[in-house]
Image 1 (cartoon, rainbow, N blue to C red):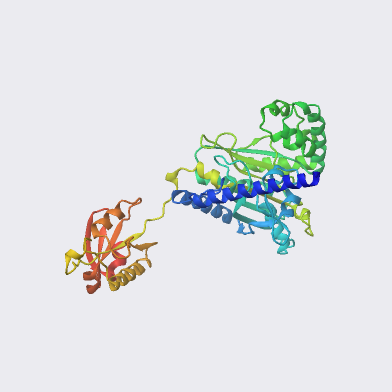
Image 2: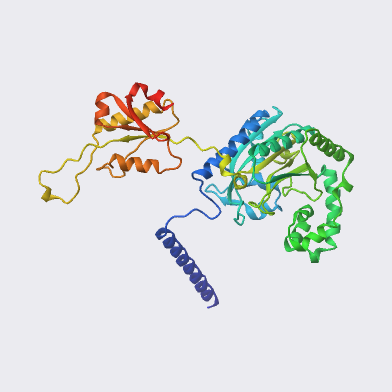
Length: 475
């Protein structure tokens, strides 16, 4: 009897789940489609701004000798779990992870460095060092969406793999600083640097932090209590109010650095000073991923558009040995950074973004209305039509314009059986922003003479010319 009762309750729960799923399907199929939460469209000025930032980034990276790399948006989950650390917030809370049809765990890429390291191994580049690479890719993290933080976001990043000398750190910091300064963002740029030392330094400091924070466990936030058992260094990065006064009294990392770590960081600091790049040493700066060591840095943009919690617009660090963590044959040194394009767009003034030149519209003059023989048979107004040969002539004119202008369109009617009068077509075109500097007009008369009408929208003049002189008239 007990077994039947338990089976009955399970059946009821299963039925309730089916009903809820059915209601959700009905709701989504009857409502207008919408974007997934935390994933946004980019159209018009927003996309122009996005491409403007990427163009600056690619130009700067290319000037430093970096070449592009593209990696798949989906990787085996182990790629990120082995490199980022199973106790990191990214792996523990934020991965888009799923089991595919071959029963393998897959993950939508949350960051670019691990994928680049995997690509170096896969493509047998471990003995072709150094590698200077840059990428611009979509990343995915299941975070709470807010201004400057989306679940799908694009990052531009650079990776310098195969150089252990601290000069590589200076090069990467300089590349990122040049890129951001060239953008002329709204707000003051502030560079924070720190060192996490080598593995020996990190182990000694981690033990000291565990002992210190262990004395204050009951006063720490829930997240910091969890991090105390997994990675005490991450407590230093906590923004929770109950943690701030505790972290203020934590031991200083500099007291646990080995001589080699001190020398490495001193070279970086001196290099930045020699390049006149202003910086602040922030001993509380840590990076949330397990593979970082030695130099780490962040660039903040102090702006009302971002606020304090989302002020970081670029972050990077050194990650020696990442390839060996993935099973590579060599323990390669590496350093790099990434910058969120959506966050940079918030501090990029619209007036600094070049807008593409508007296309030259080719308008078609419809033939005069032809009335039906018996007007009593219809209440419709006489239709305006464009003959197929006139359409063909307009498309040939548009083709010729595209040879010397960036774009050109033939202004078609939304109704396939009728065509707007020329006045309405002109009004529609001139109402758009930005307004085209010229408009080309054709009709049956122009086609017969192999000519076109060119209207200058700035001077508000127009004249008829031969189609052979069209390029000269529009330039």
